[in-house]
Image (cartoon, rainbow, N blue to C red; front, side):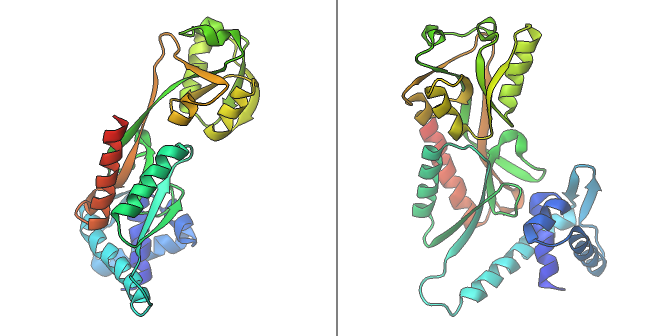
Length: 282
């Protein structure tokens, strides 16, 4: 049994996709498929159920995963066995885009204080990782989800605009008003649908991808934007946040981790830190 095959199996198990595992391991999809097939033949078991959305682990895969994970950890321990100084504790954390710099920096700082000799690597959430901070709807099969933050999306309006004086914004108020169009954003898509249903025109003034670029544009008076109620946005100069009448746009963000790893000290520590952040967020 080759260690590489177990590494590929571990990646497929964690990501729920052969395509994603191939990307994370920097190999071709046939290499991943061949490794899984060899394992299945060697052990005379079926490890994954293939379907249109990827793969789902079988009960046999659930049994094999902790051992594959342990072997991977042991490989890292061997590499550091004869190095000077304390052995680092590696943690790969997958992060979705636009999490809010203040609260995410606080969470990462708490992790570094909670876990001695932490060696933190931040990756995209679709790469192989120990845990992920993602939207609730992005949780994969076989993952547990611990909510940390709840983002309420409101309209960010330049303070210099007359519209900013209204405590609540109606859809009719938005007809033909310039927007900072951010994609992808499912909350904004819901707002666009609601506006279209009322015959209200959506006018795009600027097209961007990240929240971090949006509120400076709003403060500069370029247009209004649909943004979460992060502390740094609420206290930003030059804009106000206003609710939309009859529309509530909320996203839940939290920690996603593989169900079978709950007993591992590393995962237990991460969960503990995230629960503390959840309590602070209220």
